[in-house]
Image (cartoon, rainbow, N blue to C red; front, top):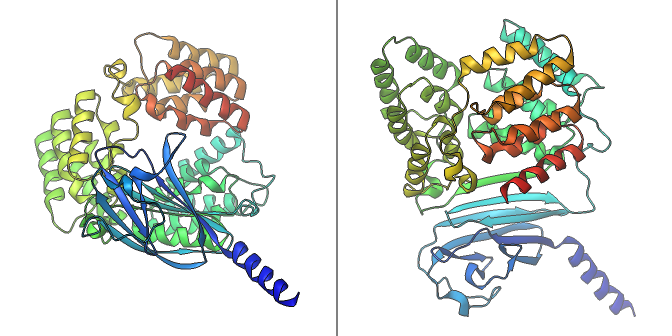
Length: 470
């Protein structure tokens, strides 16, 4: 009996400490197939059952600790192999290898995509709770907008930092990850952003979305530091690595984006030129300098200074080799008003080993190709007119009339700014639905769920978008 008890105890201990690892071949196709080897066991995209359109397999016997992973690109004839078998790699050289860690109480998700992107995400088990978010209600849109405007109005960065810090330290204040991100973007210094982001994590109501805050940090070192802090506080860790080729594994791990001070100096120099030809030459020289790297956010600012779309496209292609975060580079497609330019950029990124734009299902549709968002000047005039009304009913009427005008289109960001002028969440939802038909970038429209505080309204907007896409 004692021996049986010992055996059962050992078995139960192993069961409780073993981690679930879900391997997903997201969108695997017939053109690129992969063999993934974890601790010597092989798993194949061609031999994995599809679940809701995604091929996945769950590995349930990994104990906490270090595990090896290698990825090989293979042909279409690997279906004869069995998942979990100790098979030698089908091809000779791995395109990616990594040692990853599993922890007690956490499950690991590993996604391998046909474009060569591999991502790791770690989540607490079902019985675990996210750090202190239960029962928290985020700051209302009205209160947040007031706070945002107060911070923005401060002349000196030290005053902005102090005001944001005070807001995050106020016991009664809680924030969505989207609200945190907006506040941090008002702060220029990278180190201050990092410290404020750490402070903000303890106050977020949606810690599962906190990784959306990471991109306000330009350097990989600071993003890693924030990620380490989140994990320390019980949150999820997310790491994304491009593995389109063997060399891409390490091609940009050491790329550090230009410091804020140096970039601001460069941007002012470019903007200081009166002639577009001089601006183009200045940007081209910066992108051709071998030791210069830029975050996608920095590149967006530089390229936005170039008025001619053709020149902007040529410089954007040149910039791809200088991006410190190439996995975000396809976001720059928003810089172009013509669908032809967006498609050309997307094809260039793919040709050079990058990831396909996840929004092509919407943006590449010809029904949106001629939609050009309202110019900044016209939008600012509309925004000021709506915001100057004393009565909310007048604000709602102005916004509704704008979205009902047949000749005008709006970017998702413009729609968001208008919706935030409306205090009633019910009115905001109705206007958001009205605005969808006028969006110049409908592939990004689901981001507007962040303007709603209740999950019911967030779900209602997403459901509406889905019905319009059918």
